[in-house]
Amino acid sequence: MEKAKRENNRIIIPSSLNYLREVDEFVEQKLREEGVSPSLVTDIAISVTEVVTNAVCHGNKNDCGKKVTVSLEINKKQVAVRITDQGPGFDPGHLANPLAEENLLKDAGRGIFIVRSLMDEVKFEIAPDSGTTVILIKKL
Figure 1 (cartoon, one colour):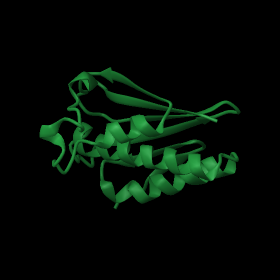
Figure 2 (cartoon, one colour):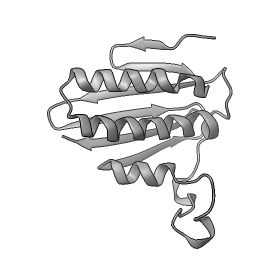
Figure 3 (cartoon, one colour):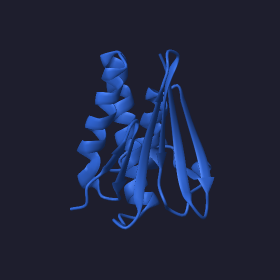
Figure 4 (cartoon, one colour):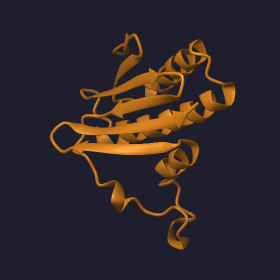
């Protein structure tokens, strides 16, 4: 199995869910080193796991030849996490409402909804030829 590549506040993984634990440990360690409160570490880690899962499964279609990059920027006011895949991109406006009656019993489709509830801001940068970047902002 290929190794994840770590550089300061960035980790790059092949598109496989086998790397989720390593990403989670990396993110939590960096946040704790910067003194982020345990409750915020949990919220951010859950959000990163959800978005990385989407990047691997939906963005890169589980293609281990493609990468997912997770970058952290931490300052006194906020934590910003950028998750970038190499997929074709998508329109976040077409995400189904997980609270709609027809979606309540579905097994999937709640990830971005959960992330939006945990983070202060969620932004999408879509580049059809080079992937999608999801930016998560949590104020400290």
